[in-house]
View 1 (cartoon, rainbow, N blue to C red):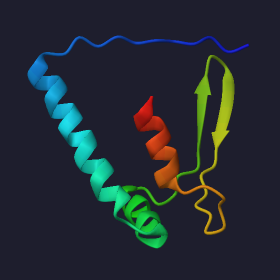
View 2: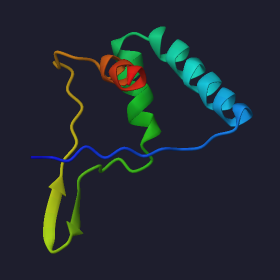
View 3: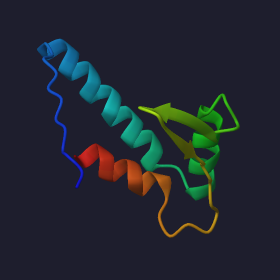
View 4: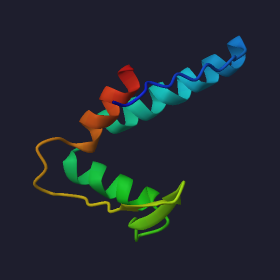
Length: 86
């Protein structure tokens, strides 16, 4: 069973408004892109083209592989909208 971890950040009103404005700008920008534009946008965000890596945590090695699928049932935009709604 996985524990739910909650982090609480204390922000000033100015900091909160800045983050909300930034989130809204990104949301608006992404919502106007088609699927291929979204894929290109996120692929270009990654300076490191090889997103596969291994990370050791408390003696266990985790291997992470990242793929961009042109045939995916969900777009990255749908996933981001889901995350932004949380």
